[in-house]
Image (cartoon, rainbow, N blue to C red):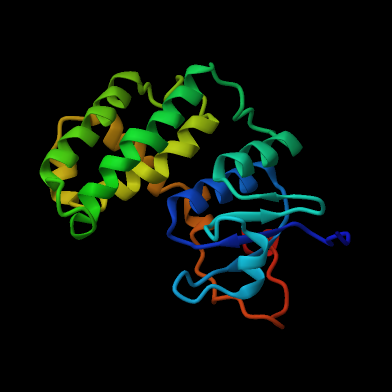
Length: 213
């Protein structure tokens, strides 16, 4: 494989997996070429890069990172100036629970037509159990005042869940969780990584992550 001038990140702006990857790259101050993908019309260069055909996908010189957590770990292994990786092992347990049972029930709440045999209200209530667990932990972040990789990995999915029915979400008695999410949504870091990009096409001039953020 030829030497890349910069790693290439295939991205979809609203995807929570891509959001967590961009958050880690920004915190790590790692520069990449960013290519926005239209999921209904995936470019062949993306499909040739990503084994799963999913975003985010990070093309490095000698490998491809096709999982968002691997991208986060790679970025923070390059540079971790705010010590995001300084968290107990339990942080990874929470991330895996988020990506497992919580994401499963989130999807069944958000996309009931895709899961006609599942009651979306029951799925919502099951998903809420994970949020109540977070509510008890938060002070004000998952591990005290210091924000961690776990916070950045989980928050995009809490945000996605909240957007399903914001009236219901903000009517719940998870005070710490709501404050945690609102602080995230209003943060300069989140606003920066949510910059809109035009869909990438072959022949476009490279769009560099550092130029946007």
